[in-house]
Structure formats: structure tokens, C-alpha cells
Amino acid sequence: MESKVDTTLAALSDPSRRAVVELLRKSPLCSSEIASRLSMSRPAMSRHLRVLRRSGLVEENDDENDARIRLYRLRPERFAELRGWVEEVEAFWGEQLAGFKAHAERRQRRRAP
Image 1 (cartoon, rainbow, N blue to C red):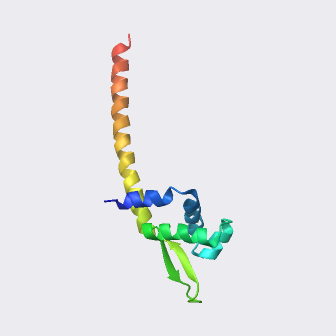
Image 2: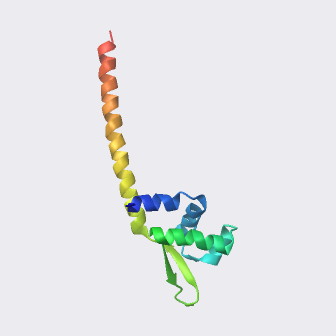
């Protein structure tokens, strides 16, 4: 079974979807505005937004002023999960590198005249 992190990374593996995320970091937008800013066709943008919605990175809501307009916005909780995973990996490698550094320094002190 695919984990949430796997789904998130798969969704973010595409440069166009990362560009959508960058736009939505600034403010919620409708799909036509996103497509226009990224010089992409509406059908292509629709496919990218579907992937982002299914991954949980983006949600779709009605505009407060016009129910015909669907606004897309980021869902911060999914990014928090990804950040947590990255921090775990970073901590693991930090410990590994600290251990290697200590080992290398011990070896160097033994070799010093």
C-alpha cells in the first residue's frame, strides 16, 4: 500500500505540478488563472490539479463571491507530513555523519606523530 509520503512525492515529481504549488503558495487561484500563468492548456491543467487534489496537497472550494468559480488552495497538513518525513531522514543522516566524523577524527589522532 502506498504511503501518504509516496503519494505526495509522486504528485510533486512533475515540474508543472511543483509550479502550481509555487503559485498557490501566494494565494488561492482558479484553474483558468493557474493555466494562464503557466502557459498551459485548461485540459492539461485539469489533469495536474486532479493529481494534486487526489494526493491531498490541494483542495478545491467555491469562491465566496461566485459559486461558479472553483478556487484551488494548498492543504498545509500534507506539507507538514512531508516536512516531518524529511526531518526524520535528515536526523538519521546527521547522526550517521556525526558518527563518521568522530571515527575519522579518532583515526587521524592515532596517526598523528
